[in-house]
Length: 347
Image (cartoon, rainbow, N blue to C red; front, side, top):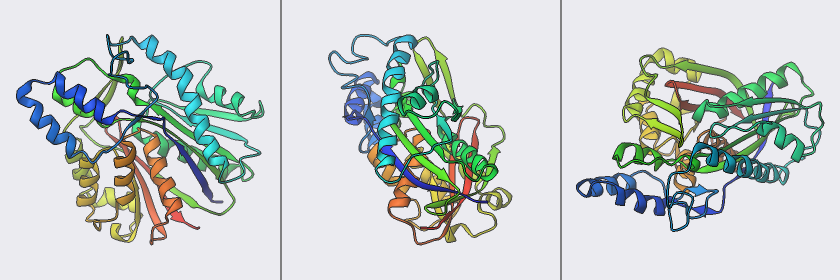
């Protein structure tokens, strides 16, 4: 029994905050380092990032006078995250009939609320109280792979299941009070977004094949989130791209990821964690120059939306199928760990 991603809807908030953030961050950095920051920002491969916050660092904005506490940030999450997720579900419903949902799998790593966002969505969508819900949290950028893997397991065990998979992240709620260039460059990557997918046993779209997972050795501190009194502090070490490239240079690891198929013969839905990460993947696997074009386009248009990003890449591939029939979904996140699945485009 196979499981298929039949369609994906995506949503982003209305406020483009990328260039305002660059100006704000640049003003906080030691003047001698500002040209370095500006140069690295221009090379990030990001043109836009979207936020539920209107002009967050401008006069009167959420971060204008002081850094809000975690309570205030979670209040915004509880209000805006379900609304953005519902926008993604509506985008999905415009493509395919979403009736008869039996299972709801939600991934969200940038906020907490109870009753959970899964319950809020189920109630807002009018789903049956008997719908089985799964909430995946704090897995970071590879949470979408875990959500799709979970949906695959459900469909393979219950062929009549209709699984709604939702990812929603409000990364811009976690701006930190810092003058250091490294964390500001990390924050430069992240934006808000949501995605919703329908996974069933009915053939169509993209088939979800064998999943894989791996924790890279001696890398636990390279990507991490710390819950503080002023939101979630992200640490993204500059060594991450090199460590990913090193892992993908291991033939045994690559064989697990590709199933033994030469990488250049596959299509690649790679989480757009940053330009340097995409460069590391492309170089290590000796991929053709355009192999990661969809990932780079998502990064340019929306930035890194944590778990939503991989879903956005898959949505782009459903809309504009690659020439290869077989492929791989691959994402990296805290740990440093990799998660993904084999894919097959079936139209």
